[in-house]
Length: 308
Image (cartoon, rainbow, N blue to C red; front, side, top):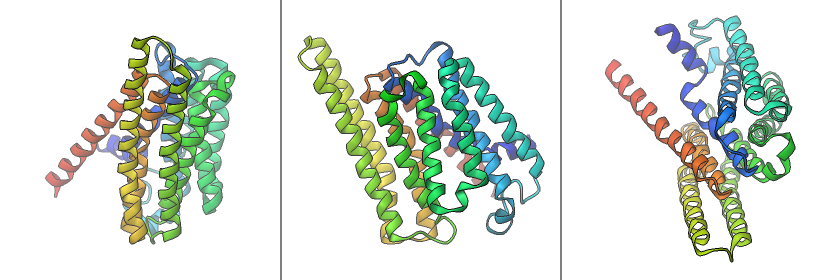
């Protein structure tokens, strides 16, 4: 059991929940059903994300030995070679699941996504600018994988929104050890505002194009717009408040809190995107992941308290 927990820590298991909604949001934008074999696509995203986490710790093992010695590799709980093999195996599993769930059109996005993940961990992240942009590209490609190569155009706005948010979160994460800057924290906050406005504008535009139909359809449309607005409110309040604190005090602790909030707020953002494209089912599935994440974090806190 201890061995299993070590690998779950290596793969950032609870954080994997924040990537599952990418393909659901992309599929909603492309008007694809989230059921049938396509349920394998969120699993593909989870495998590729976990592969990136294992590869990240493998690449950072020397830095982590100084800055984060408690992590699985520097603490000796997971061997570097085992982490690398795990990353390779999960990458292969992710590509296999993308092929099963979406066929060639999904693999056409899954392959560059996997390549981008490896490029980020091994090369791009060494530079703050290329690192943030590369991570944003990974998230955007994950959304597009849910749409498929034949419907990329319809999902580009959703991919750009998720990618932009990820760039801001990645830039903030650079300050988790030594602190961030007012400029970076302000940029992240501005991104949150722009992203929120973009999702609401897209939902309003889609709604305007459907006005004038039957009263029942108009009622459904109003409910979708209300649900989208509620999801965006959760997103903006969750990450915006932490980013605001980082502006006023750009300490390492506030940068870490803002990074965590930014990662967790990806779930309501994905839900808002799915809802804005008229997919309440996908939105509800994504929303349930938020509840699961809170339960897991609560259980983890209880475990730490009981062990102390």
